[in-house]
Image (cartoon, rainbow, N blue to C red; front, side, top):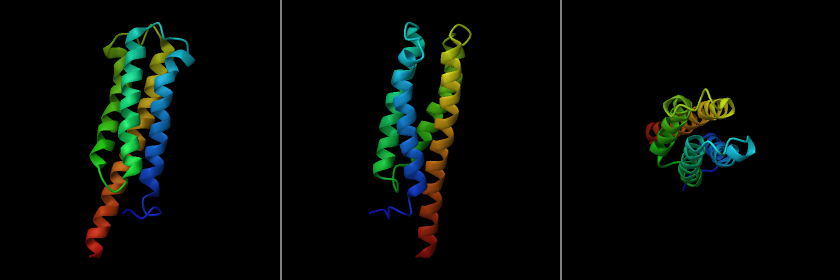
Amino acid sequence: MADPNKYTAPRTASMLNVIAGAWLIISPWALGYSEVLAATWNEVVVGALVIVFAAIRLAAPDRYAGLSWINAVLGVWLIIAPWAFQYGEVVVAAAWNETLIGIAVAFLAAISATTTARLKANRIRAR
């Protein structure tokens, strides 16, 4: 079992990504652009995936670092999506929301994955 103190950074980053995923799911209604279906569905689906992957990492911070890299890719997708689906210029709130949350998700996911990799490398060297 993972030492809870040793894996504080990946757990914290994963918990913040769970919160970011939850925000993604509710943000179309909170920010008033739920009628833009491309933006709404993108945020609901990506938000749910971010929550699932981050929750798995939260429960097992010493394993499944690849899920954090998937979340990093999802974060980059959030930055690109408003222009890929062509609603970025129409719904500025969605574009800003997805860009800012995308940056946060990608950054936090990278912290979670790289910290776990570093801790595993240190554990192997200590043997």
